[in-house]
Image (cartoon, rainbow, N blue to C red):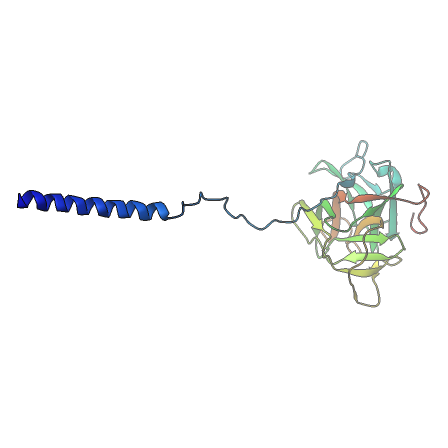
Length: 251
């Protein structure tokens, strides 16, 4: 009887202990279901502007060898664009590249500094924000090709960015946000005399976009020159007051 009582007492203790454990567990707050994991901080959506223009140059008709002639308005493939030449206006040539089967603008015969620019007849272009220039180029020698812009107020700027010599064609995106610029004396196509960087220029209304290598060409052969196969400009159109207008300088 004493053994049975001991067992009964032990059983009662075990039951009491189990009841206490269950009661304590019941009083614990229920575990929360895992919520959504914190992700990276929200990034600002970049508003990328559309293609404003692309110029490929019209293919040369029946070129012989590396046929060439001074680039002219009729060489533009886009009817909405005007061609502007500065410095040595006879130097920039439209050339057929037989090895690449493409028609390009070439600066090898510029006897002095020269520049080529394009102007939309009906719109300025807003090159602020995420605007960019994209082009296919090939330079030789010490020539470095720079983008240039003419603002609506007539100010000319040349970008710090430059495409260096390359043994083959390269396609490059040139973002304009944060770009450093210097004033450009468009008559001689040389840097402005002040030698200062233009801080935060207003690119919201640009009249012309183009390029220069700020050097004379070396002539035919493997010497110094720049070649532009095509150029694209990405930015928002800004209507010109009164529609089509003529520029006060250049061709």
